[in-house]
Each structure stands twice: as C-alpha cells, then as structure tokens.
Image (cartoon, rainbow, N blue to C red):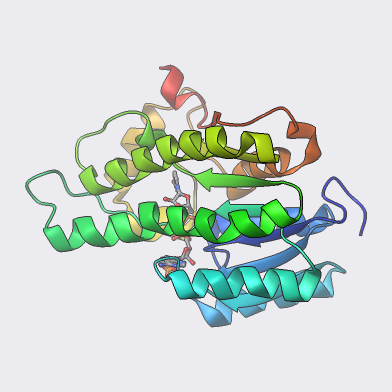
Length: 250
Ligand code: NAP
C-alpha cells in the first residue's frame, strides 16, 4: 500500500475499540505496517483481520499497558515482524468520573497506572528501538480534561495532565535524536468509553459547552494522529493538539 505513512511501522495501544481502532485503520490505509495491541484479544484480532482483508499489513499483540514486560514484547514484535518501529500511539486509557472525596485510593491508583504509567512505559520501551532507527514519532493521547478542569473526574484529569507534561519532557530530551513527541487532546468523542461510561446528562452538558455543538468521531482524532505520525509533521514536537470542536476556546 502506498500513502502518507508508506514504509513506516506503527504500534498502537488500546486499538481494539474506539479511537485506537480508528487510528489503526487510518494508519494502515496510509501504508503503515500496524502492530495493534489491546487487553481485548478477540476484538483486536478481528481488527487485524479486517485490515489484512482490505490489503493492509497488521499484527495483533496482547498488551496491558501497565506491564513493562508486555511493552517490551510488543516492541520486539514490531521489530521482529516488520524490522523497526517508527510510530508509537499511546492511546489506551480508562475513565473515572469521581471527584476528590469520592475517589478511592484504588480508583486513583488504577487510573494513574493505565493512563499515566502506561504512557510512560510505552515511551520507555519504544525510544531505544526508535533511536536504532534514527528517529520516530510518539503520539500520546491526553484529553481536553488534561488541560482544563471539570466538576469530578479528579484521577482522570490528573492522569491526563501528567501525559501532557511528560510529553513535553520527552520531546525536549529526544529532539536531537529525531524522536518527536506530541500530545493530542480530544474533546468528547463517540466511543464505547463514552457510550458505556459517561452518563447521558454529562454527555449533553459537554456538548452544550462545545461550540460545534456535537460529539466528535474517532476518525476525526485519527486524522490528527496521522498528521503527527507522518513526515508532514517533521518540525512538530512538544506540542499539544486539540481535536475538541472548540471546547477549550470557549
Ligand atoms: P475506549 O472506547 O474505552 O477504548 C479504549 C481501549 O483501551 C479499549 O479496548 C480498552 O479495553 C483498552 N484498554 C483499557 N485498559 C487497557 C490496558 N490496561 N492496556 C491496554 N488496553 C487497555 O476508549 P476511547 O474513548 O477510544 O479512548 C481512547 C483514548 O482517548 C483514551 O486514552 C481516552 O482517555 C482518550 N480520550 C477519550 C475521549 C472520549 O471522549 N472518548 C476524550 C478524550 C480523551 P476495555 O474496553 O476492556 O477497557
């Protein structure tokens, strides 16, 4: 397949559903060899089968982003299957909507482990492979709620804020080695996380605070990820990119 990512190899976490699913499909359509990973094995293998049937190249690997061993194996799979690693999309995440006093230590630790530690471990595992390859692009999926506040979602907001600043830290550290690191900040996007995990009244309230007056689509986030992954973004690092229908501008 030829395209904007022709010849590149991409590893995506949380690719079985939602935004990760759309990102895997979009990157494959643009010519990348995709290592799609998730804790959901059946759904992840189904995605890979769909990509391959459409003429793309993809492999599934089971990856719990809280496991350093899983990350090492996922990067090794990319290198042994496709020869290298150019792109990492740290997409996997979980949501929790409790405020400070209702957030148990268990909720806090779980959300931080998946969203923040998972992103850190992904970068840590991918950077040595990217260095061998002479560079790469890391895209960390944060949120508008990694930039601004809302009532509740204490652990989620803290975890997404950590992604925003660890992105800038890594961007500065690795710029000289040709490794670009950027964060993407979606507003409310129609995915299983939102449909199954966010109450209707909260969805309506966020849409009411969104100038474009609607939820976004996973494909609209995938388009931003594609740009940041590609050589079109060759002078882009350490930045934060909103895909939010104007939510932060209000
Ligand atoms: P989603 O529909 O829930 O999909 C996320 C995928 O990640 C699921 O397959 C999920 O599996 C998987 N996952 C969960 N924990 C994991 C772990 N420990 N290791 C590996 N995979 C794991 O979520 P989404 O809405 O597409 O969200 C994707 C990213 O965008 C997340 O980081 C999220 O915080 C962020 N985001 C979403 C929105 C939104 O409005 N949807 C807005 C801003 C930012 P399970 O289903 O089994 O949990």
